[in-house]
Picture 1: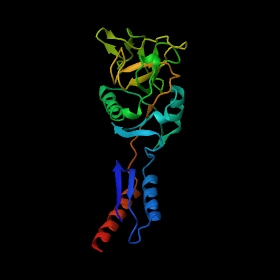
Picture 2 (picture 1 turned 120 degrees about the horizontal axis):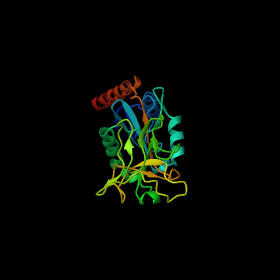
Picture 3 (picture 1 turned 30 degrees about the vertical axis):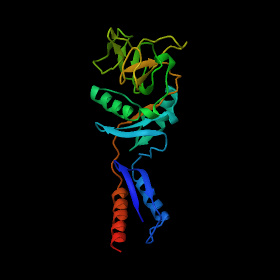
Length: 245
């Protein structure tokens, strides 16, 4: 039998098989794969609407594609139902240029499944992050309540916290609370492909009822499952024996 596991950070992403031989049946393959997935410590397959799973600075991130797109509120609620290593998920909080760059790398690598646009965001494509001013106009906060920005385009960072609002040759252009929608623009998306007032990777405030892909963050990186290395060794050992026979 020819059997291949394509693995990323201990996760089973794709499985390829040909006809079983020498007693290694599909049922055995299913048990091995099942063990790997159960051992992956809360990191499910990309088949469940995920475009990417990656790590940065001790945190795990999951990028959800168009097939899982939600309004900002629904995406935030969904994120809170997820858990890794006992830590609940939340729409991503971005605290540095390096973190923003890493997230943008994932977005650009998967932009083919991040195609939903916001009419009130210059027709650009966006991915929801956790920033919002739903409680008070101009008081931009993350999911944990931390305020990082006060005001509109001419506003200022709170406590020196990081921000990456849209800019053009005239200076900062966002958040402008453009009243394309009666409710204004109370949630932030990170741009996939740029818009007239900003570039890819910058943030724009758009109407929270837009249905967009989103990125979830967890304050933990799951440890590799104890069963995963064993399962891979079992498969590799069986392949060696088959080649000798």
